[in-house]
Image (cartoon, rainbow over all chains, first blue to last red; front, side, top):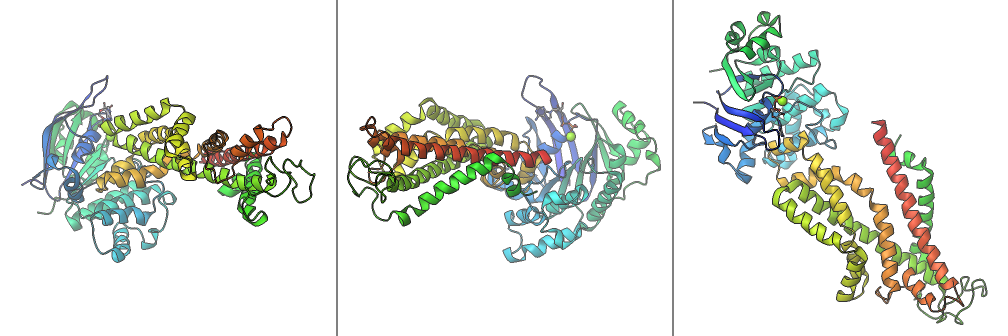
Length: 263
Length: 276
Ligand SMILES: Nc1ncnc2c1ncn2[C@@H]1O[C@H](COP(=O)(O)OP(=O)(O)O)[C@@H](O)[C@H]1O
Ligand SMILES: [Mg+2]
């Protein structure tokens, strides 16, 4: 009983240089689990993330999400179903309309999915802000006038707003500096323990993936070359890409592993 | 430094603002200074300027007060110029946004329409439209807008094509926002500023097109416009050149004012971007 089942996904971007960004990719994710997707830049991680988000249409393959045919959804049905599958992007500034306010960005998600009555949306926004470690009066601030780390918290609050079962995080902490990164990773782990949300955690950095993931999938040139429990992969990488990624982070073995997902 | 302060620092902007304010005041105060019909006969025909104290700019062939006509004409020119430009920019920006954001067939279809309009010279289009539908202020406004919405449409489309690749548009799709709402509420407002920079050129063009239409007798016959004044003066160009020169100067002042004002705006906008 998987939450997400991606099977044999292929995607070639049209154009002169026909790169096969996804070459027969299959992954699965259980409820409340974090799958770390690691690979060098250009290996197709973002394409996979965007295909799962229905931002890029794959050429072939299938995706099942919460026991439904995710790729068959269209128009209104897809827009409504999106409540259950959310995404946090890499660039904390670019992910918001530069004219938006913090409260407006989160409120949009509530309004679109008709969550709560109109007059108590402001309260819901305040609750969401507090859950991600911000204060209620951040709601009025323009998105351009808070720090990068705060913006990424707002992005997480926006993703949480619709009570998703899965959040795809594409390099969500890569643009943040080290201390801010640690706080955001902490926040993500705590939210997962409280809400049982599953994460597809995409990063080029095995050390970051290590801190939050239960299992990992290693990607190279559009293919998944290795999957397994994160400790096993780090202890004994089977693929050349896996060995290179492990070698790039010397003190990896000493980091504590992520806790098991709640049953 | 805020926008107004930056605008005030640009000499073009100030000059344009002063010119436009004077003309706007003339247009707004026309009914106060010159109540009644500016087309009514006020004195002996063809009085020269400064000949008669009550009629400082003299009278035309029919004895109408040129000063009153000039003030009321400012009104017509400004109304037509601004409305036509507003319609052109609004329609153009909307069409361009839908084309750029919709992509595929929608884009193809809309851009073919834009090209069709672009092939025909704007003035001919206006001429044909007014001849068919008949002259009235609204028709003249639409006629002029018909020939000037394609520029804003192309520019808005180009802007939208780059904006739609940005992450916040993907983020809006991810939260389930309707594509139409994304286009109009998320993308359009950001595509608009560069399109607005076309305003001054379009207003200036619209004022001149309106004058040309009136000159050819295709303006609203119940309204004095500078174009119709020049047309009227043409009949006595050698004996009473002032009848054409006075409204001509009005036109020059208005077009120049709009242009300078626009330059000031663009410069103030550019300075903000320069400061990051
Ligand atoms: N929109 C696109 N059009 C064409 N090629 C693309 C596009 N996006 C990504 N690619 C190509 O697909 C491959 C995978 O890219 P991406 O999924 O972004 O990898 P990653 O996120 O692992 O860095 C790269 O070779 C990249 O150049
Ligand atoms: Mg990427």
